[in-house]
Image (cartoon, rainbow over the protein chains, first blue to last red):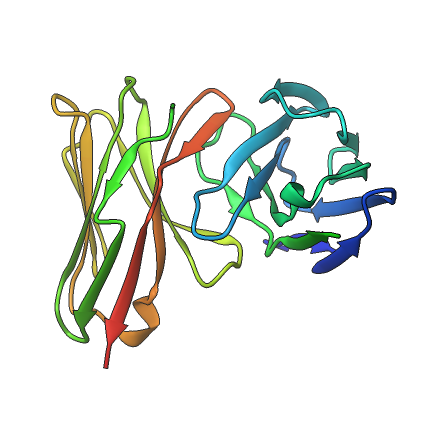
Length: 112
Length: 109
């Protein structure tokens, strides 16, 4: 299995909702990433987990809460989002100490 | 900003022509990678060049790296309609991988 699977593919939520994005990989990768991407912009790094521990938080607002319950799963919990948080959220993974990122196909999030 | 600059921001060429995209960066690197993204989907890794390499080939792709100028270029030869996509360079240190602003490539039939 060489895939990174993200669910859901599309999500529409109100500003008072709580939702979660899910990312799963079974390649044995021990580094997992969340990126945010606005239209016609590059992916922006949000969080990195290395060996299930948060290693990088790029000063992301607390309304985004990451979680890495095990080595295969990465979640992004969303609460009280703003319309400007609407974007494509991309998950990626790589071998610990490796260089190449493997990406999921993303969750397109719309905040109303 | 840690993001590099890529140029051009957008490029339209005829099918069969070669496409060249450039990437500049500011900090020292261990390697530089290139990724492709088709219309808002996930990114796909294309090629990696290490800081001690000057040129690398993979199929129709050729990447060069000039560490003295802190720049890299990606050449796609004999372009095809399926090459229409956005192309990003990326560099990282340890776990942090940062993407450049990207070039949107459009192959005209």
